[in-house]
Structure formats: structure tokens, C-alpha cells
Length: 533
Image (cartoon, rainbow, N blue to C red; front, side):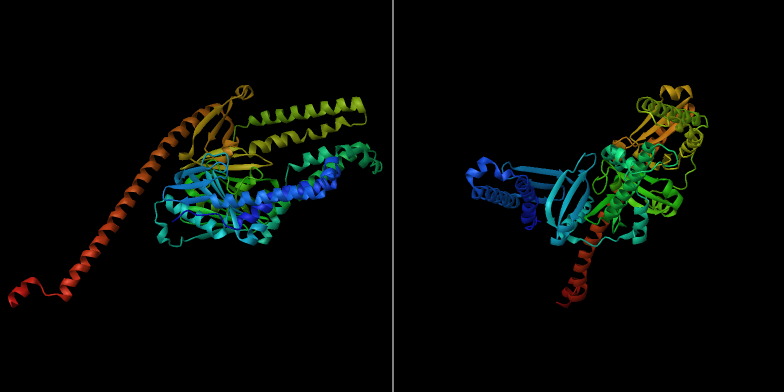
């Protein structure tokens, strides 16, 4: 196939996109009186219009040149990209490095029929290559053909790949997802911007049953922060996961999602590092959970919030999530081994120290400003043993036939499923406080995108002797799993080679059969010809 160009519609779109900043500058200058500066007055408005018009003309010329000089080609082995206006650049990206082909379209791009294509590679911190912009049909062709080329198939004789819809998010589930979503980044911003409003808020409040008005004002701000956090989380969830669909093909998962920005992406099965089932108290109470799929150095669909974009299933009933986990990786039903009960003392001590620090801060503030009931923190004391128990209860690990499974967290509980052959490193850590209680933490490091950020699967605060045994057992199972996987890959290669040879033999046999058939049916055997002669 000859080299391809970007969509012609990319030129006006990029001009408008880049020209928006110029227009914003001009509007800002007009609004702030920048056009009334002396040198502007000397030159006159016509000069200003001429400068702005010249800038727009240069922008159009640049984008037209960029379009004419940009070329790309998807060959059998590489993705070749030639770009640059002032400085030319040629890149040849081996197909084996490309892990995902993600398509993104905002509302305007969907209206005009263009899309942005991102090529992600394993272990990369960002997008390896981008096409800004091609037609949506061309984007889907690239997304469809690249896996076929990596498998060595002939894309010229493309046959439709059978797919199976695993999950789709209906309106009811989308509403539930929004209701159970919180954006915990918002409360801090609310406090920063609203902390100066406490005196104003408290001035509007009557004496509430003898409570200091400052305390009532803080409570009002806390409630407001929670409401804003909930509204922000619900809005983000609905916008991100509107129209969510997950489809399974022969060797990958394909997903679509998004209201304002529509994403079409893929998750190759052979790149899956870790499956994570995440929930919180609200989701557990309602019987729902989220499924995250981590691949090598990449979170599908971008990374707007660091985590949410990696959701393969944003929300579903817990039993359905468990079924999907076993569809992707046959895990079974984990039976977790919890940390020893003495770890509850460790957690209770942590909470008690934190509460003591908070009490000390409030007491100091009361000494300086007065009217702050610092002693109210004592009401939290009975909850400390309960919190320590639940922290212990929601932790554990399990060694399955093919996976190690860990669970951690109460407010944000995560259950991680790691195939043994995906383990990169097993790390044993013991702090000075853990050593006093004969405890240790065993971390299972993978090449997953969340592992890079420090969110590895980990058996936390287990018995020190159990940690030694677990580390040795994981090492042994890793070696055995990799050997078994390599043997399976060799068998698959041999089977593919044998199938190819059989196909060649059959094609040769059919050719010989056709020649022989002509002799038998339409011609006279040589011996009979001689006899008749």
C-alpha cells in the first residue's frame, strides 16, 4: 500500500484549533484596554488588523505545508512516519513495540468525521506516535490491521474477526456509577478557596445549640466540600463512561466510551499484567465493583485522572465482575490468608498517634485563638479499635494454581490478580516497627502501569516466617510458570509451522490433481495412442 496522508479536513481543523489562542489573546487585549497603548495608537487599528491577519495567514500556510509533507505507512514490520516542515523527521517504529492503537474524537471531530490516533508502546511514559488527524475509517483500519500484521497475517485478504460483546453500560448502571463516584481532589480545593469565607459563613448562622459558630462554619464547609466532591465525581464518571462497551475478539479486548471525548481502544490479552477489582464501602453495600486491567506501561484510553481511564469495567454487579475476571484469566475463588491478629495493635497505634497529633494541633489553636473544643477528638477513641479491625479484615493474600492474589484497603479496597509468569521482582521489606512485631511486607512487582506508580500487589504485614516462605514459593512458581509458558509458545509455533506446511502441500496437491484430471478426462493415454497407430 502506498504511503498515506492525513485527512484534508485536518488542515482547517488544526488552523481553527491553533488560531483559537491568537483570537483569545486579541479578545483579552481588547477587554483589558491593551489596544489603547500609545504605540498601538500611533500605528492605528489597521496595523493591528494587518498583524493579526498576517499571523493567521502564516498559520494557514504552515498547516498546509505540514499536511503536504506528512506521510505515514504501515508496513509488514514497521510503522514509518515522515513529518516536519522546517526540520524533517523520519521514524520507523517496529510493530512488535506497538502495544495499543487508541482512537480519540471530541464532539467537533465526530461531526466532521476525523479522529486522533495514538500509538502506545510497552514501558513508554507517553504516546510513541500520533496522527493528527485522519478519517475515522482510516483510524479503525489502522487499529484493525496492526494486530494482524504483528501476527504475520495477510491484511490484503482480510476476513472479519468474530467478536463477542462482554459488557455494555446501560443508562441505569451509568446513573448508579455517577451516584457512587466521588472526586476526592475537590475537597482540598474547596477548603483552600473557601477557608477565608468561614467568618462570613459563621456571621450568617445563629448560635447552634451552644456550639461555637466557628465550629458550625467548619462543619458547613465540610458538608459543602463533600457535596461538591460528589457532584464532580458524578459528572466526570458520566462524561467519561457514557456509552461504554467492551467487546472480546480473538486476542484482545476492544472498548468504546465517552460523551464529549469518545475513545476507541484495545487491550491485548498478551500484554495484560494485572487484573484489579476495586470497590469502596458504598459499592460494597450496593453489591457493585470496578474492574481495572493493567498492561505493560500503559493505561487504556489515556490517563485523565491517573486511574479511572484504566477501568475495563467501570461498574457492574460483583458477581458479574468475578465472572469476567475468570473469563480473562481463570483464577477461581480466592481463599485469603489474613495477616496475624497482632497487626491490629499496629493499626490501632497508628490511628491513636494521628488522633493525638490532631488533638495537639487543636489544643494549640485553642490556646492562641480560643473557642475551639479540642477535647471533642476524644469522641473518636471508641472507633479506633473498630477501624483497626476492619483494616486487618480487608487484607490478605492467596496463592492459586496460576495466580497470586492480594487484597488491601477499606475505603478503597483493591483485589489484585497477578499471573506468576508476569512477576518481575519479589521484594521483602521490614520496617523497624514491623520487626518489633515480627511482621513483613512482600511486594509483587510487575511491568504494569499502576506498578510504575507504586501501586503493586502486596501481601502487607504478614508474619515474618510466612513472608520468607511466600517469597521462596513465588520464586519457584515464577520459574515453573515461565518454563511452562515458553513450552506452550514453542508448541504453538510448531503447530503454526506444521499447519502452514500442510496448507502448502494441499495447494500443491490440488495443482497436480488438476493436471492429472485433464489427462484422464480429455486426452488419450499414450499407450492407447501407440496401439491405435
